[in-house]
Amino acid sequence: MRKFFMIGATAIVAGMLSGCGHNVIHYGDGIGFDASLSPEDYTLGLNLRYGKILSAVTRDNVEITMTGKADASGTTEAKTSNSGSTTVGTDGSLTVKIGRQINGASVDLVKAGADPEKVIESLTKGDETAGQTETK
Image (cartoon, rainbow, N blue to C red; front, side, top):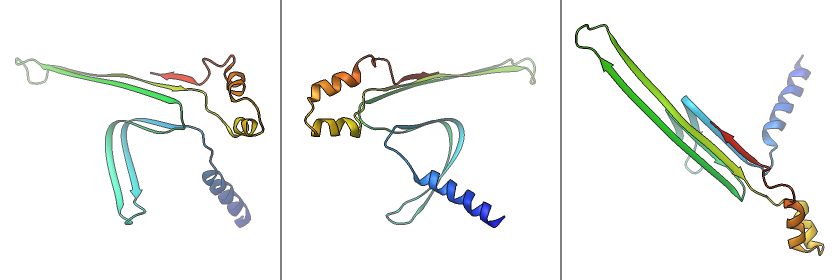
């Protein structure tokens, strides 16, 4: 049983430590709790938030647009103390446009003597809409 636990823990740690240079985008809406540790002076940071939050770690040639709108209106009638209505609405959009991003293979081709314009042309041929994402 202990061996299975160690294998599972090793797999989880290996998955968490491995990464790549691609784009990481995280969007949250609602209540959230964040904890952090500053490596410079080892201070602990705690943050309780309510609302929209966007965290993006991107490579070159990325365009991110986030719009948000919140409306709140409440009406109560003076005749009775129990009657009333409240309307709360939120609206917004998140648009992420990821353009052509050069990888190591393209750099190696140029270093080997290939024409940089032809490498870019071959990468972008038929790829005008790839990488565009819109979320509402």
